[in-house]
Structure formats: structure tokens, C-alpha cells
Amino acid sequence: MGYRVVVVGATGNVGREMLNVLAEREFPCDEIAAVASPRSTGDEIEFGETGKMLKVKNIEHFDFTGWDIALFAAGSGPAKDYAPKAAAAGCVVIDNSSLYRMDPDVPLIVPEVNPDAIDGYKAKNIIANPNCSTAQMVVALKPLHDAAKIKRVVVSTYQSVSGAGKQGMDELFEQSRAIFVGDPIEPRKFTRQIAFNVIPHIDSFLDDGSTKEEWKMVVETKKILDPKIRVNATCVRVPVFVGHSESINLEFEEEISAEQAQDILREAPGVMLIDKREDGGYITPIEAVGDGATFVSRVREDPTVDNGLSLWCVSDNLRKGAALNAVQIAELLGRRCLKKG
Image (cartoon, rainbow, N blue to C red; front, side, top):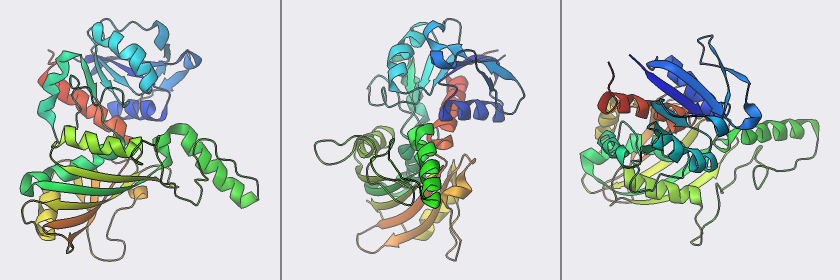
């Protein structure tokens, strides 16, 4: 006996990927609904590669009564308007937006890291999916934190344009083409030219000079992993279509060698260690696309601090950073809280 599942924002990048992941992982769905804004109503979208076509329903008129799980991939606006309605109707919401992440009554979940926290979902019937950059980082950090206790994290991200949605991907493609044919370039989605460039600015600026994306990585890591960890982040948009990369520097309370860290990561859930000290012995974003793992490479000791390590972390941001993590939360929810049959 399966679940009745709704995907809200089904026509967007992440919503489509949610449908793909649900189909690939054979999530037990008795019924699935694709829901989106009024402009997409009546469109048809394929449920993964099953050949089954779903007619898109209008979020404004959709009744969540009798549905078990709603995966929201529609942004903070629709999440604010419709997630509480779905939750009140008895449908558990797993929301990909930033709206509920820091709500103390809403668990923020990465299943490989803090699965026990999901038991708190009953307070609001809502579970939050973390920021894409945070999700992959904490998967890599969790086993190392368990082994030697992380004190401090300094991370620089190299985030693909798909993190900014279809508009971001279109802008990179259009600008790249314009450069080759000599057409003028006019940034629209991003503040500067993104083609053949990097932009040290994601989301809005805060009073302390950091951006909201950087703030998210700080506070979400603390909520998911350990409130005592000190985190400093610099988030950068790069001209890559899919796949976020991170250069992470760690300071531990206890001694840990690079070799010990490699051994730990090799066995860690959700982590794939690809770390050969030779040309090409590491992962780049293009190899991570379509995969659910968090890849770790270039593990090495940092001689500038006591008990320091540096590493390179790559993941498909549309998968582990969004759609896959949401489906994994749904699977965890089913195992622990919504057992049927």
C-alpha cells in the first residue's frame, strides 16, 4: 500500500527532478499529482521515464485533503500561501524553499545527518529541505564531526547557474552564444555577466557585508549539525550549468589525519570518495550531474592550524541539493512516521 503524493511546482527545474527521482527510486505512490501555477494548468508532464503523463493542476484550486505528502518546489511565495493549507488538511509538507528552515517548530532534515529530528514534524506538519550548498556540505562533514568534533568551517562555494532556476541556465546559454557571435550582452537574472566570469554574490546583501546565501549556510549548518560549530562562507556563482562545488577548510577539536578522514569518508552514507593524488584523480561538477552522491576529493592536512583539514566537495545541486534530499525525507517519513499497510 502506497502514498498519495503531490509535487507542487512540478514544471520547474526542481519539480521535474522530483518527479524523476520519485520514479527512479520507485517511491511507493498509489497516486501522484503534478501541481503548478495557473499558467501551467492543463500542461502535460512525464512522470520520470515511466511513460505516464500527468496533467498539471492549478495550485489555486487544488484540494490537499486525502493526500499524504506534498513536495513543494515552488519558492517561498507559494510555500507561504499553500503549505499551511496542505498541512492543515493533513498532508505532510516537505518544502524546498527557505521560508520555514529556521522555524524552531519545523525540522530541517538531511537524512544521512539528522534523521531523528524528523519526529518534530507534527508541530506544524511541515518539514524543511535545506539550502543546496548546505545539504551537500553537511553530508561530508557529519562523519568527520562524529570522529573528531569540528570547531570551525571556512567554505567557499562555486555554485552553478541552475541554482538560480531556468532563468539562470538560459542566461548562461544566451550570453555564451552572444559572445561567440558578437552580440551585445545584457545581464538580467544576474548582477554581472555570468558567461566566462564568476560573481561573488548570491541572494541579497545583509548589513554585515555577507549575503543571505552565506547566512543560510551558517545558520542551517548549526541547526542540522551542531550549534557550536563556527562557520564562515563565501558563495560564488560560476558559469557551470549543473553541480555545486565547495572548497572546505576544517578545524577540529581532536587530532585527525588526512588518511583517517579518507577512511571515514569512504564508509560514510551518501558520500563517494574519489581522491587520487594524480592528474584527474578528483571529481568535477560535470561528473556529478545525475548522481545522488556527495563527492569528496583532495582531502589533505592543513599545516596552518592545529587539527586542520581541507577538502573539495561536489554534488548535483538539483539532486542532493534539492529533489533527491526531499524524496529521501519522504522515504524517511514513511519508514518512521507514516507507515501504511
